[in-house]
Image 1 (cartoon, rainbow, N blue to C red):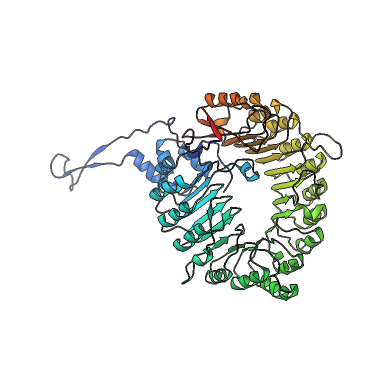
Image 2 (spheres, rainbow, N blue to C red; image 1 turned 45 degrees about the vertical axis):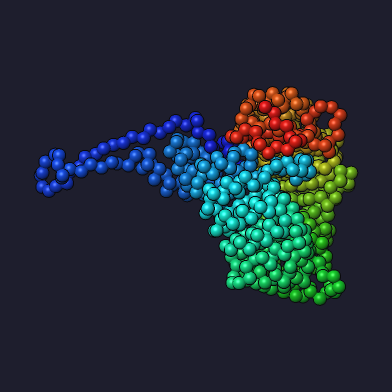
Length: 624
């Protein structure tokens, strides 16, 4: 599922601009008879009513639109006329809500009546970095209540950054007899008791994925609540974010009676010896999260090594490997049997050095996705560049994210990747130092880049060689990478960098800015020059009310704008709210921010068909 693939307002629910199609009735007279009988009145004549023209069209459209899967294409089809709008709604089985406050559950369920899969996003992304006060909102309760009566055939729910309670999960489990998939990404508010309800009542469950969510320990043995009799339908079980011990015996039995299980990601309470037992039970796995990847207390290290190697050798279908929490690097060579087939490898929790990485990475010639900590240094990235020629996505995370830390990766690692991995499409790169030359080299060597996120953690850091701003590097990215849709900028940047983005970033949909810019002109360049901009995130930058006003023409086309610790004042935010009544303008007070004047702590603006929400907490002021 793409982040956002259309510019139209959410769900295309407003139809005031579409003319009503006229309904016409035709009466036709026909005669039944033999030979040359003359038509006339009487019992031999028959009247019938032909189908409405719109009805015929809709029957044809229904057969065509059911094959249309892209949201962008479906939204475009719904804008043709009233008939297309109606039929598109009837044939849509997957409902995507990019902002849970952009439309009400009542309106969404009234229009889309045959939905089997629902995806909803809540809080903005900056909430992941503790930039939003807790208890802001994004509650799942009104959505699951509406869906319980509207969608009895619902099979799948995907939630991201939503607040989910035990009652929500209980209602979900009780309302949908055919429910199969639950995916919770960066969600909170629920615990192991909620998971137990899902496990016990959703008898057709295929997917239970908990990804980077906060799950409280209710001291409930949720794994044991899966049905004990017969084979399960489970295909994916991901719980690596659950920070509490699990009943391993129950987990082992569950895995043993799940012949269709393809994805299994374990939490850090699963030892390497237990991992071995699970792998023996499930050699059909394609995706594996290893858990802690360290020995059980009191067990000699060497005891499990030969067995673990054998277990990996038996898992011939493994293509994705992750986990490695609390890793003991001595065990890394045991994954060698699967390295040649891996297309995805996640070492973002593994604190390993370059030499330890090389034992593995030199065997991963098919790798397309690689996440890793910066502890591998530039030397490790050079090893990746020399081996992984088919790499499409790279993420390098900081082991120590402090601004004053001397980062172990730099422009040297970035340049090596650009020279060796020329099929790269997406990169997230945390570092302390960078050069324009390295970024320019990447723009030339990797022209297929769609996502470029460079996070220079030290504030206002210039080119480490020339001491110049990083303007030319980011300018080269937007000039040379013609497919770029997502960009994150950092380091010492002047308004010149933003002028490049506005001039050349015509496909950019998501832009993240931190500690950058000179004046209001920087933001003005972006808002006036990026016609497809959907999501704009800005923190700690010198943009004020004048810059905010420059986007009045574009805000209705955006999903949201987030600005924190900038130079906005309540009056400027009020002006936007009055000028654009269909835009919700939230001013959020953050007590964690020191107040030296009356500037706004956080501004969060988003388009909505419903107007201001009714569950705003006290620290949120909605401008009217």
